[in-house]
Image (cartoon, rainbow, N blue to C red; front, side, top):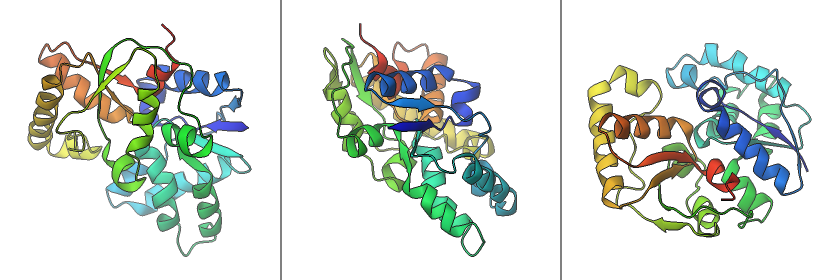
Length: 239
């Protein structure tokens, strides 16, 4: 397949290695990966703030950028949920509604695409570490993804996957939520971080870069040994 890689803002600006890792895995599986340089923010911050008139131009631009793409794959459950779940809602009743629904049908979160669309679980990765998985809210609740990333992790040679009792609890980031309500956000990540530490894992893995920044920031400030790692980075490893 020819796959258009959708690179969210957090990946582009803060964790570009995640996008590179996703491309490496898809290429390893024999697919052609393209990056359409005209892509920009998906508009989620404005959408979540209730500024839909500001979010619509970003959504329309995404429709134009990914027009004709065979498949659009993004390493972020949050941003993919914006494009797949909320674009049709945002553009309902406009001339772009039908195209928004069409793009939604061709847009996938990275782990979802591997397992559901390609039917692949073992991508040839090797990572001899103990990891635990954090379910990002959008991937879990909007995209209904739970087992897909875990199947991929269980197939990684040498990897030990351990569950945390707070796997489905929000990390407290929530985009602008963490900026508007920092004390609540910090309290939430303390609960999440404490549960992660109790697993004894070396790494906390997720499909959402923003969640990993929130969790990783708390772990770093507390001087804890657990490191954040995106699932694409795990699947790209062969050591």
